[in-house]
Amino acid sequence: MADLKVTLSGLELDNPIIPASGTFGYGYEFAELYDINMLGSFSFKGTTLEPRFGNPTPRIAETPAGMINAVGMQNPGIDRVISEELPRLKKCFHKKVVANIGGFSVDEYAECCARIDGEEQVGLIEVNVSCPNVHNGCMSFGTDPLGISAVTKAVKAVTKKPVYVKLSPNVTDIVPLAVAAAEAGADGISLINTLLGMRIDLRTKKPVIANKMGGFSGSAILPVALRMVYQVYEAVKLPIIGMGGISSARDVVEMMLAGATAVEVGAANLVDPWACPKILAELPSVMEQYGISSLRDIIGGAH
Amino acid sequence: MKQGIYTIIEHTPLTKDVYRMVLSGDTSAMTMPGQFVEISLPGFFLRRPISVCDYDEKTITLIYKVVGQGTDALSQMKEGESLDMLVGLGHGFDAGKSGDAPLLVGGGVGVPPLFNLARKLIAAGRDVTVILGFNKADEIFYAREFEEIGARVLVTTVDGSVGVKGFVTDALPEHFSYVYSCGPMPMLRALYKAAQGKGGEFSLEERMGCGFGACMGCSIMTKEGSRRVCKDGPVFDKEVLEWQI
Image (cartoon, rainbow over all chains, first blue to last red; front, top):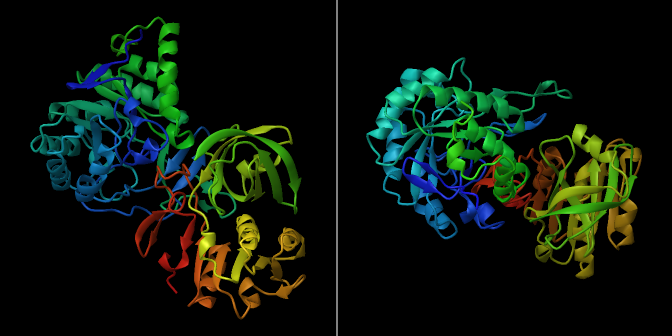
């Protein structure tokens, strides 16, 4: 019997499969399609202190083996997430959820995390310091070790929940950023967010996306994500949630060998809404094929 | 919404870049006219959203225009080949609100999603008028098909080569009970102005990521807050849309 269980900072997951923030809403669209309780957890839509509409459309472009989005952290704001989304989610999801929190200042991150700290449904907080789609915020924290350190310390001071810092790949060297998060007290690292990219429409001769650039995700970025997870695993002794282009059970195993304790599945959910159940269904046979009895045993196995 | 494999049983060009494709398979997820499907195409990451022109218990008819590499690849598909589709997406037209004499207005490739609606309205005994707007004669399609199911059809062309010269708003009848429309945004805006005081529903188009409400890629701001074109629409009550006119 294949053992899929993993543990993230004391949070025990039945399996390492976590739909990624921004590809799973607040869960209930998918709960209409399958029992989302089969998932390890899921990371809800990036939430900020104030409600946000996000960027103008078009917000989506296609790429070879991937896509670009410039949604811009559209969300109803932390208070409505607590008063409306979480109670609605509770009816269809009985496990702990990952709260993905975005912000535009250190105080805003801290205030948002302080408000979600009392929510029993939240198993861990994923601090998004890496959204490429908003100006004057988010990614500017995520590409500066001092910014990451300040946000991490401020958030840790207001919550008892495990804090995972979600890093941007849009840097020359990911390691100093992971180290900054670790030294500031992060409980884990989540990576990678999307890569900054763009497409140009040959008919209009202008960028496809209204915001010009956006976050590139999908199968095409898997090797970049694997490389960065591998580097971060060597540099810090913290659990890692690995993501970026995962769309199959083989990708999950590969990401865990690179050093991830759990994985997030993102763009794949948008192309096939049943992507996560399919990955879960094929995991045991892929494990058997490669002589793996327990997923815990392979974390960082490639090092 | 259901995912399934559908077999192409007919695939024919209607104009130089507009094609009609009939597929057989499970249509049980289709609940109203104006819904759409998302088609997976080999070699392309995202699915393609295409509005449903008509459907019955066993078949789905799509009419699409070749506008890019994805729809170009779709146009190369042969009868007998199959497609992976998500079916029954979005909120469509509410035929129950039509009143006795509904007006249906389609512009270009906005014409197809009105066809099943027209069929249902005629079956319900409504007096249906359809205005089909095109640029010129060789772009016209489906005027005869609408007539064959019993609709009164008015064609407009911008160059005047067929029917009324001008835009769809140049052919508006004096009396109608409700208006349903799909077409380019400038046409919808002009129609909104021309049909003030009448109720109606407009189908919108937007670049989509998923097509089923998860990614927020196609959000628009309405008078009632942000809405997803793919899930809350594509058909909206025209009065909730922000027109800035």
